[in-house]
Length: 496
Image 1: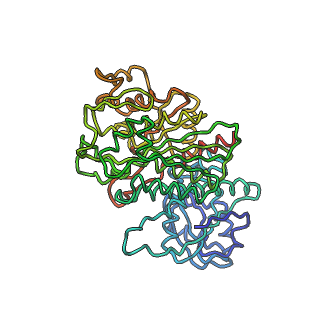
Image 2: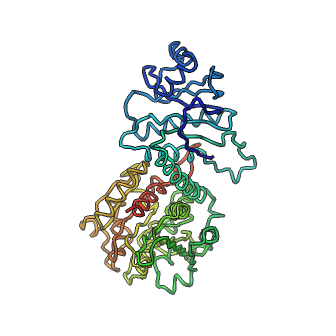
Image 3: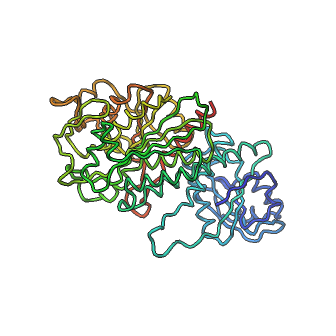
């Protein structure tokens, strides 16, 4: 869908549908009032009849109003006459899009610039609106024999005042790149695991390198992984017929002298749990266990499309965790790239095993900051549910930057502690550490494990087990998170 920004009077635009606001108590917004006067009170007449009360989510479609170039007017209920929160605002916009999808028109005009959203200026409000519209267009029917009907709606024009046009246009440009990245992430997550395996992800990286000339791609196969001493990473993939891959993508958009930011993604393309086999119910959703790697792909795509003036390295640790005669066993001890040894007490705690070696590998880039992203623990879902990502790290400034980015992007994270007391839960009588810390504070002890491999730089860990996909039901599928959060963080660093 094309998004266009204009600063003209809404009544002058020829369009299939003009969208205007009405608040609770049947109060017409400034644009709706102007349209009402132009049409001889056509809007106030239907409002007076009680056809719409202006409650949030209500809508009413009016046809062929006089003295208006728009074929239809969609009255959009916006609730009480006060600043909207992010979630109600998104719901209102999604509701409007749902109505527009059911119409035959190829375009629409949104005259909603007057809506006030708490804590948001023209830029951030428009970006939220644009991302909601673009993400709402996403479909995944690649494996359906009957594809979805092509949608009639091709273009939406966003109206704004002249003084705000540049900021609104900037918001749309950023939103389009973020939505493109989210779509890429969702596609990868929704692919079946018989197609989306580590070698397939490596091919996606190569394709991205061909599409964007400023991107260098290096693929490390299982022999190189083993030769580098990545014993933990290698152990996870050794039970599968699908060989592991370490994918390294390097974007040099900043000055040569500037240290890069590094994103590290967990890419377990299917997770059976290995020898510590998971229960069968819902195991199909373990194809989403590469959500961290998929979100790094999507964030990188957004950065490439925006040509951000930063240096960025993306490291994806990709493997398939399967049970077999060659699989790692509970009780095995492996030596990591850092030289530290790990006793594997549970082969289903495999994400931290691939990430720990990737975090050590990240040292060679002398990074400004390293962020790892992983669908790491069910314990994080117990703690924070499906709405908020867990955040841990070793640097308060970095943590603060990520929390603020999540707030601005409406893709929130919440900080969990990494107190020394939790580290003791990883003690092993036979190795430097165990790969699990018992049933208490599982998300935190997973973060503690990773922290032991991230002492050389500023580091943060995002546990997206609850946010990377929507589980079960008709809405099941990858969410595209935390692409907005990560892209916002990098936009902030580029602006700084």
